[in-house]
Image (tube, rainbow, N blue to C red; front, side, top):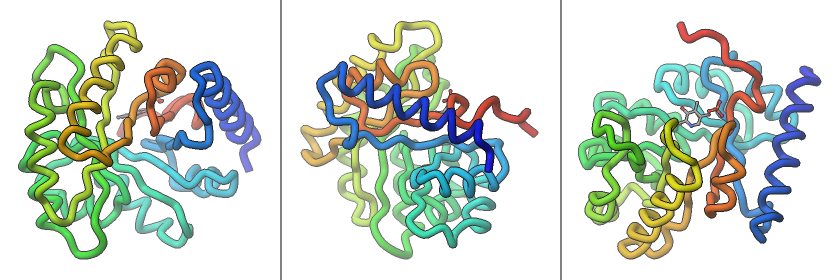
Length: 227
Ligand SMILES: *Cc1c(COP(=O)(O)O)cnc(C)c1O
């Protein structure tokens, strides 16, 4: 077992508790997802032994391969946080417990059409930048997207997800995300999840009300080069 991994996990968890207390929140209601992209599947096995039950991947092929290899890890939940392609919807759905990146009706329809089991939890990804080429639906369009996804029987809209832009104070960007979360709840009142906060900004995300954090390198260490 990698003691550095255990130490980094414990240090991040301590910071989560501290940020939650500072915000007057109960740390036990915050889900810490460990983003394991680009790392070997053995890192997930090590994290599982340390009690981690939520892991995040951003590429479908890597998600599918690790899911195949590790499906015996009982109670492990797989979060897909990457751009989803419609022609890979079936593979994404088969390997995911939660898809954080629904940002257009076509991908929602494709995930719905790929159903062959229980309802899938999904989050609507919001683009908080001014660049329409980035992943995510524009904030002014999220309510309409929520209304559409809500009509799909096999998807369950749980809330919203976003990545803070690099060139802006995270707290300001997260305030817009929080407004989007309110918009979605007008359509789907129990869609209470807010997935936000990475290595560089998770305390700000907790202060804004994030329910799901996606933390990679602060826990796993630097990522191996992308192949
Ligand atoms: C990689 C990634 C993360 C984690 O990033 P870190 O900065 O390593 O914590 C979170 N969210 C998404 C969508 C990612 O792709």
